[in-house]
Image 1 (cartoon, helix red, strand yellow):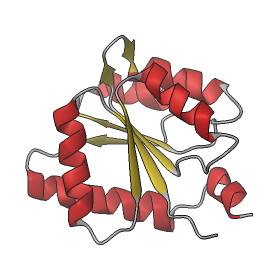
Image 2 (cartoon, helix red, strand yellow; image 1 turned 90 degrees about the vertical axis):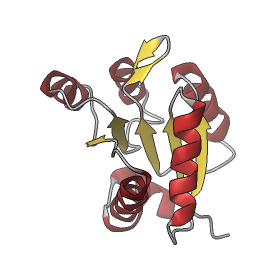
Image 3 (spheres, helix red, strand yellow; image 1 turned 135 degrees about the horizontal axis):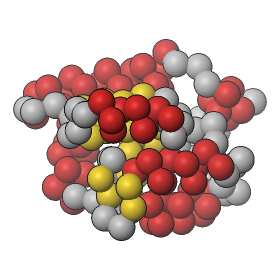
Length: 146
């Protein structure tokens, strides 16, 4: 059974989720997109998938979530052995050095500032997917290929 890689986008703005979905559709990549509106919904999604479906190959995490900061989610994710190896890229509007440092200290694999135009978002989305789902090798991807 061949499965296509998937992304879990953790974003509390429905508009931002839809823009990302539209941008992903503009690429030629065959990637499934799942969304969660907050940290708890993301953990429920991951826990539901852990035994019955492949886990996402990549998590895109908004830094400013309602009810919880993205860094708090990231620390909790990294503390759970079932999910600790999933690559996480913080996808945010913040270009602040303090946020950048906190995210990497919390276990982020990457940090991308959201582009300002839809065309830039399409290119950014394609680049993120190509790198993290095609070129990058991680322990998590090695485990899912076995």
